[in-house]
Image (tube, rainbow, N blue to C red; front, side, top):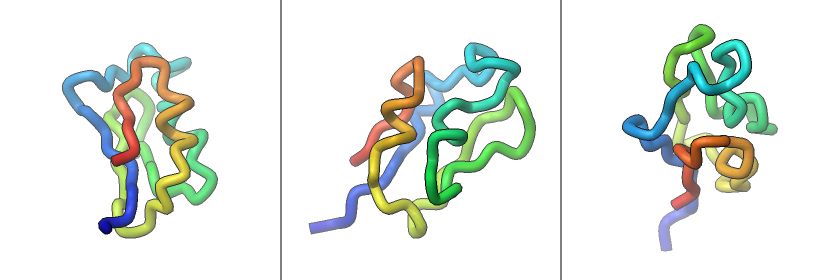
Length: 68
C-alpha cells in the first residue's frame, strides 16, 4: 500500500484568502515539507518527504489540501 501524502488542489487554492497571503497549511506543516516561495504564491509539497500527518489539510480554510 502506498504511503499517504499531502496533495494541493490548485484549482481550489487561493493564497489571497489566507492572512497576508501566507499559506496556513504550509505554516502548519511540522516537517516544513509544504513550502511557499513568497506570500500570495501557491504552496508546493515535497511528496517524498511528507509523512502524511494531515496537519496541513486541517489548517487549510479552503479545503484545498488533502491527504491521499
